[in-house]
Length: 154
Image: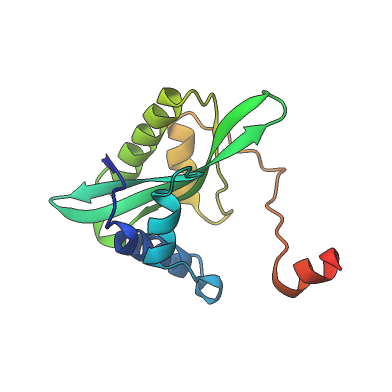
């Protein structure tokens, strides 16, 4: 496990694209290596990333961003994506990524990490529960974008 460094944009595109493909959401996939490089390595980044390697190959990644808890009154971490490439699954990479993310959260003073998991991802849910995560079945992710966002803003 290591923190993303300049030049990792293509690796992050590869891993996040694999996740989008796995979730059937490639039609909304638009991030580029330049986007990651710009947003990770600017003066005040709000995102961060960890890279997992297996024998020198990129095996997976975590992309997270800062968030704020009004209940807690301080910053927390939102785990946007955790992905392990198919050829590296069942090797403990996801667990190691989550452990590295937890260490990073504690080092930054974040008392909470939160993320979403799709209903059909039984393997992910089992892993997260084995790590001590609570999965709240009541909350669902809501999004608004594109024409709907523009219409709402009008």
